[in-house]
Image 1 (spheres, one colour):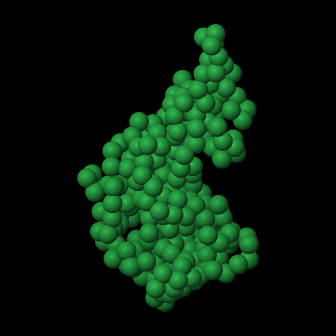
Image 2 (cartoon, chains in turn purple, green; image 1 turned 30 degrees about the vertical axis):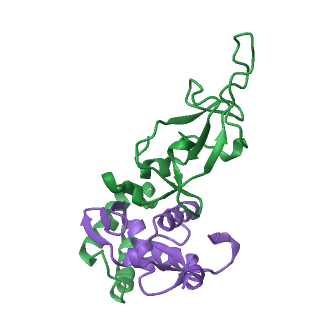
Image 3 (cartoon, one colour; image 1 turned 45 degrees about the vertical axis):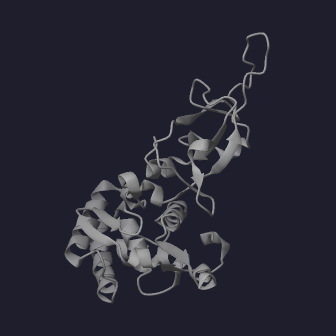
Length: 107
Length: 163
């Protein structure tokens, strides 16, 4: 995975599994059922927005973080890079997002 | 209330971002309310949350990340009945282990590619304990001696239903 501080600009996209999540908004918690793995995920608004930032095509992690911060209404950099990267790593592990390069290579 | 005013401005400008096309899962009104609630709760609410509930018999269908797939735990090394100073030590670079990590017998997990593991049962497990500087064991009683264990992060362990 790209390190936000590395300056590299690898793009990420949603996987088909992420696009077919069944969402339920429950106050501040977002419950998403992933039929492909029979898993139920619990996200907060920040994580839901990270996924949302990738809805309209490939973007870099830096762009996703910046967009998420803007929609959250916080200053740029207020979302800790470590927290953001941890979420990206988990979303990759869960098969919800993937690197565009990897997706192309697999085709 | 300068803070509130500036936040409302941010809300307004960000609603324009939302209105420009990113709309799934978050409707505008609830988003505004959530931002205000988050201000009250503070910065902790900003950190992304990812928890996964795995579904019973289908749990084996999905994989989770593993920090260390297999590492030896040292056994007793004395014939005098003294277990020895390093009995139960997880035999790896101490920097690879962190508080909250979980030891699981390596044999109870299956590799499912790309550094991930899966299990179809709830394996026995112990949280890692730093007995002294740079000396980690599985549990306070130095369990899993003479066995190979996998080390899961606390998040991966939770995702797998362990812990």
